[in-house]
Image 1 (cartoon, one colour):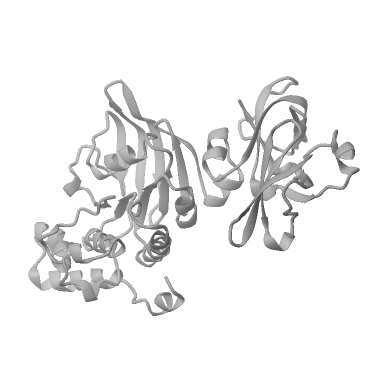
Image 2 (cartoon, rainbow, N blue to C red; image 1 turned 45 degrees about the horizontal axis):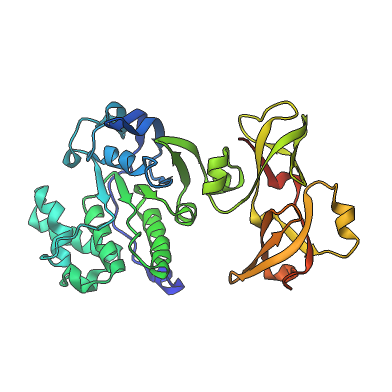
Amino acid sequence: MSTVDVATRTTAAPSAVAGSVRLRSLTKAYGSAVAVDDLSLDVQPGEFLSLLGPSGCGKTTTLRMIGGFEFPDDGSIQISGHNVENLPPHKRPVNTVFQAYALFPHMKVADNVAYGLRRSGVPKSDMADRVSRALDMVRMTAFASRKPAQLSGGQQQRVALARALVNRPAVLLLDEPMSALDRKLREEMQVELKLLQHELGTTFIFVTHDQEEALSMSDRVAVMKDGRIEQIGTASSVYDSPESAFVAGFIGRQNSFAGTISSFGSDGVTVRTGGLSLYSSRPTKGGVPASSGGKVSAAIRPESVVVTAAGPDVPSAASDAVNCVTGTLLGVSELGHSLQLVVHTPDDAQVLARLPRAANPPTELGSPVLCSWTADAVRIFTS
């Protein structure tokens, strides 16, 4: 989306009052397979919350239960203070945008958007104005007379959004609505969707398996695993302070090393893994084994690794050092504004680093380098 688009965008029509969502001990099983396991969650009015996780983690099932397309085996669902877990979808103050958009191919764009209003018995005198406003929100007024087959994927997504928003839901549910778009269009639509949510103030609950998508759009992210919420927080807190090895590994890239605790103190933990010694000043929430010999894993983000050229005297000087290791530069990849370096260490491990071009790191393959990082960049998790 260009800056001109943002600046000239028409202010959207007011939506319904943003709703809150309260889930308590929500459980859903299909035979012996538990899809959602005793899940509790609070979503604030006007919040953009993403449910993030791998396939089969329960995020879509959770969304479908909020929308009324699945009923829980146990637990409660409240929307704006009212219990809705036993109500059908059309009696809940929510609308859903599906992955496949589900537009009626024989209807024009305007008729697709008006469909829900007709079913709700909205007077014709109000219908035309509401459809016009909804299409204007998503910049599709000029396409009102076209049919879905005459639209691009991004345009179809806008129509699906307009059709969901025209009913002024208290909560809008979005089930991976951008998964079919190419990367460039997907990134543009991420910006547009976040701007639209900000303008409307509607509560959005967004399901995705794309980490970058969730981090860039959401007020908060709930990372799910095996039907439960593993961690919930702002994008920065989930990325910078993962509370489990799963979250650290699923959100972004990391260097992961399995090892044992060699020393433990109130100010930090030292872990020995092969020929590498790592010291962390940031013990993980929940703690780690408070004794030497405990098995743990250590994680370091690639952007926290500094790579410099290593002279002939560095390997011996750094062999017993903490939070640094020498190695051989194995690969260099261009990432646009940054460089990704792969370093092979003497104990046959690899260290991944991402550095800004301005850092001017060594790039000659096969050259000796030194990798280092700070104590607060090391996260320790129980194995």
